[in-house]
Image (tube, rainbow, N blue to C red; front, side, top):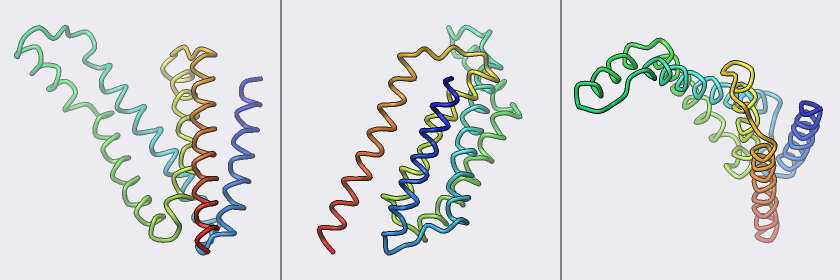
Length: 160
């Protein structure tokens, strides 16, 4: 049931932002939409890898400089940490390319699907619990992103 509502919300967000970009001077092409979706996926992968890297040193209680150094040493050589850095670097390249083609006020709301993807990945792969209250908070964040994009569209239309 939860996945149905998330899928429905994702559909309406993509539909709205696709229509909004079509009205903009910069067109949201299928290629740009695919790049934006890939930034969400890369952001989710990076967050997952950072978390897994941090968990590799979770048995260490940091009470002194030497235990802090050990924690950093364990994490520094973590494959997950370096995978996260690579994901962030690729994300930076794609994001820069996208921003050169469409307005920031269009790109950011579309790229906010990581607010949904990260909790889903946390549930499936990290066995974390996400409460209904947290899902409600995520819903309001997405609602806020949509509201901000509406206001930026109204401002842009007023200046036209």
